[in-house]
Image (tube, rainbow, N blue to C red):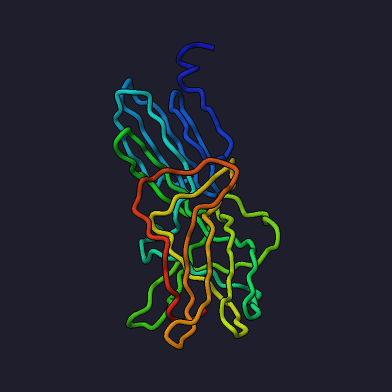
Length: 251
């Protein structure tokens, strides 16, 4: 094989998350999206994304060292536009919590895929897309509520299988500190700026503490997103993330 043939050779990676050094032409497939990355000359690279065969994103990248691009699960807030910074998970089967009870369970949530360029001092998402169909819902009143990325999910006692590139797994710790029986129908929690865990084509979110308590004669649900312990790597997008939220409009 000649050197020209070697240059044109396409290295087709499996559709796993990770960081890839662009030495030759690389193609990766995520649902209807095909990502193509290749070197143009010694310090110029090109990134392209095709959707259903049509070119939808094209960017030139300049680097004086070997270029590496990360393809990671990211917060689902970018497509088709940024509408909000929270996710709402609707439980297909509501969870009934007895007084002073707690339970740990697993859910699935939506994700997007981000193409990330990192340097020693900065991290930039140069492209973001969704393999699944994004849905959004209003939590709260039209005047004061928030728009959330919406997803219907089921409660699992064990780690469930996910739809690769569309879903991530998260673990929720439910605590009912009240003297009443409470039913949880949905969970609203912050996602903007959060890092994810990943392994091959699997994605994982942080753990969530859902705490139902009495404050000022009212039942209040507090959400606290805490670091998890998943087997795999964790993204490092260096974004500001506030993991606390109070569900003011019911659960």
